Length: 404
Image 1 (cartoon, rainbow, N blue to C red):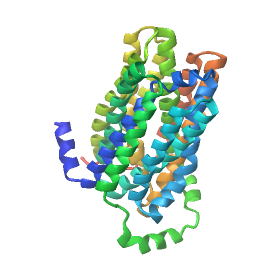
Image 2 (image 1 turned 135 degrees about the horizontal axis):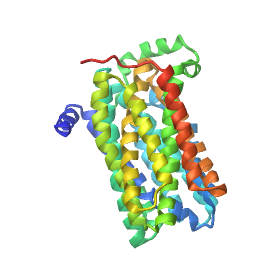
Image 3 (image 1 turned 90 degrees about the vertical axis):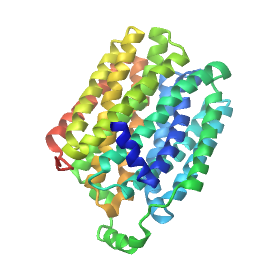
Image 4 (image 1 turned 30 degrees about the horizontal axis):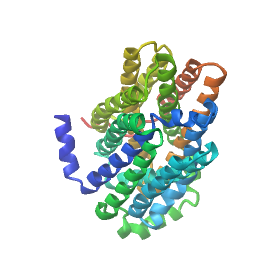
């Protein structure tokens, strides 16, 4: 019944379904390289900290481009940014595949981050454009569900492609996915920028010359951004960096098995997202964010004790539930508390703070793994996330009044 309602909602919103198809294609491409990135980096003879830098430099590019990308969606529209972003990602993917040194590989990961920032920020702004207070949780859950559908299909495919065609092959496949996504947006995606009310929006913005500073003085905005920061640390540091290496080193898992474990995380998130998105519109956002975050903390502690494939997969299931409950609803919470006239700059700032998780998380967790163990890195991740969740639960307001 839940999925029937989802498909009816998608059919009633042309922009949403087109955007969802684009993000499925893009996330399949990103998912293709996630299970092999640490192993591919090892072919250059680098340590865990330098492997973490590959994820960190991707995050640095996103962090630097998030806010300019948000402003760009106001100047030229959401649609052009969603067309160009995937093409830049494709260029970076080809560069990664042909790199013959670690530093060239690192540079092209930066290019990939630029493309990722452009299309993810523009997509969030477009979602805010087409959603309302009454359906925002559901629409963002539909979108995030499509993100995870693509992400869930990608790792398994990428693992098999790497196993049979080599570690470079998933990057070429990723480049092809980016071109397909760009063409799909060019021929199908409508513009959602409210051009009719553009003068009014400009007048509203002129009342606040420094909207970013105003957001940074908003305690609720900072706390929800820190939660998403912690989720990004978990996804990029613990899930996509430590989990594959832990499975390889401790359980002797191959690329296909690692890809399957990552797919389990994504597919469980898919179900969790749809349920939490639907009910957060009725009962409020805050409870889903905090409960989901606590479940995510438990999954990190479970990973520290992994000693079998079965326990690894159970940890992946718990992780999927936690990220699914708190990740998407955080985006809806942000859209609730940002004035509509500031969606572009607000979403850009939120993404920039969150993307610090890409910058600091992987390299720091990698460093902790190098000097001590995977377990210490996972415990640090869990403690930080727990601290922010408790702070949010005590201090933050509910952004959506219950509607029974």
